[in-house]
Length: 293
Image 1 (cartoon, rainbow, N blue to C red):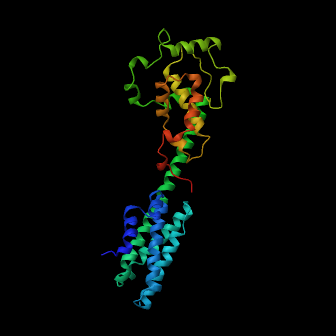
Image 2 (cartoon, rainbow, N blue to C red; image 1 turned 45 degrees about the vertical axis):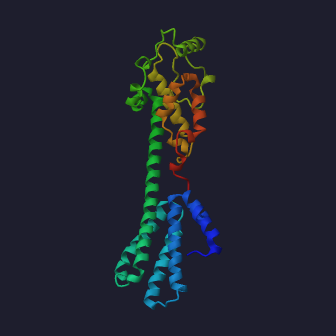
Image 3 (cartoon, rainbow, N blue to C red; image 1 turned 90 degrees about the vertical axis):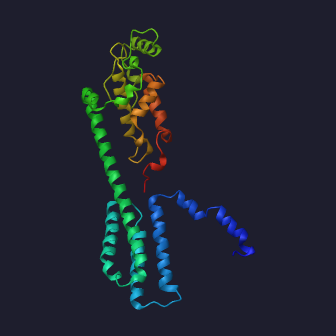
């Protein structure tokens, strides 16, 4: 039974999470596993140094080894290839120590937990490094694609394709712009701009995002042309952000779909893209974006 003097304290603990639990709830996987390793290390130190029941020299040596390995693995913080090798080295050392623990069952449970935590931390490092390499490779491919599009826009048209489901979800009458329709206010606006600018952008209208040759905004402007320009501007804009910036995870197809639904004119693409890239949280779950270490 709980004494009357401790009822109030007990009730607060039961009804409110402790501060450490609140922090762990918002922690990364790496911070979470480091917390577990540190708690396990503290338990091992209690057994070795402060336990009332004496332990043999052989047992003390085993606990000293486990504490040393726990210290080694918990000190590794930054995610990089060198630290990954250090994590794998600790894992290998623990695996080789298995034969010694077979005759010392008293420490087996601590050994198994430490080995599991070390393996999980190594997997976190490996997974993060692989994702970063894959993302850098993807950015490099995008950069090459954008550079090629400047030289040959036709290649870019073949490489960047709208998802098949995009046109299925839209009215067939909007698949290509109808320049002869008096009811298409958007196209009338574009034709007006075309006449005032001799059917092409002037240099003052082209922003830093433009990477393709000048396009005529008139009878030859199709939705495929607009999509090509939009994708090109988005790809060029992404190159201005770090590899782990949330902006890199925005799907261009989703941005283009919103632009079409809002009837954003071609000359407003730069403004629209810049505005959306300022608010990546609308498009990306920031909790799933890898954090810079």
